Image (cartoon, rainbow, N blue to C red; front, side, top):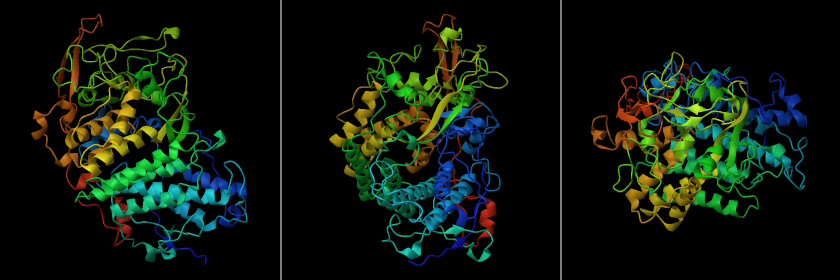
Length: 605
């Protein structure tokens, strides 16, 4: 095929937070000419490595405690931010425009990454990067490098669809749909802001882009090693990542937002993608599995689940792909209650979210026979609650440094509210906080943002099977129950389509909380259109998404489980606003819309 380059618009500006240290975070001189880069094996690898700096990241955001130093679940019913300068609350109440929306920089970031991926695919040479058959991870390295770039390009297109809906597909259409981009040249579309004649891009349908993403995964999923044998390749995309992205892309494709007719064929395709991962994983020899603390025979569901997110994040059999290793304490200082020195506690889980955790016997708190006691609300609950949320009466801190004490969120208590941090809901986020953190020494710990992990695959599988078959199959039960068993929860069984759908949605909310799933799940399920602020008031709190609840604690000072509690709506926490179809997506940056006569803005913006 004749080599050529097509130059299209540059949608760009970049906002990267400093401080990230990672095997893959190698920089190179971006002013170096392409001729110099791609005739050198080291520079070629560095160019590819730089593509990883655009991966989704929910840890780096804590470096900017002024505007983004809280979980992005603060844009959902799972939590709110105590700090009113954080962007999330205003996004939740729809107070931004296309001119000032603070997070639509993802548009420019991801297209910048796609541009570089296409440039890499257009220029990598098999005369420089060997394609020899050798043992180990370096087998057919030229094809592996191409496969990495193809995967990253597909992932960045997926992220664009998730945030913006219909988006221009930037790949080599002239090559033909049947061209394998791993073995044949695929030059893609290279962005160039100097050519005004090429600014007029049309947006491809979101559902079609998701199917294209899945196709790209098919090209690379068995070219890349399913799992690398060398720890030196930790953080590089593997075949398992491609299987996982395909699973998520087809799940989104099958969901109501992209499948309004509810064509069950799409759900069957999503189920097959998850099953393909499970089948390949089981035969891989080094299978991914749910993380379990094997250091103690007395480990509980709290240990198994909670440790997954702070213990050896780069040497974890559950994590398929993660973004970076951050050596930081910004996670701890932004999340721990303000009564601990340096703590800001600006992510406040809602009472809605806390109520979503079942009782230890597997019943929802409002079910008959659950055993729920509103005066002892945290007793006998799903162990993941203790691993995810700081609540009144919990004990935390290093005892060997005399920092351990009981958390007190009663009105006037040390963990209630202060000038720089506090809680509107009575709770703080515990997930990701390393219990080894020493406040006095301000110690740093390794944190890695999870992009794909095995639990998600199991939950994808269970959801898709239920939808495809209009009811749960045994495989669907097996998948959800594997996740529940790890957490220390009883298995579910004997459910019809609707009751299983309720269970799997709640399971995703609990298991995948604060991992940037809830925002997209609510939208792909079109939950906001099923109820309103007033209509949902008859539902239990955990089913309400507009009315966000808090807890007031009046303590007797003994912390013996007899605190008086009251659930209510805090006036400081406004109800989320959802205008359909506007709030299904972020706006495309206004400046880029003005550059093009065909790049139409999302409806409502």
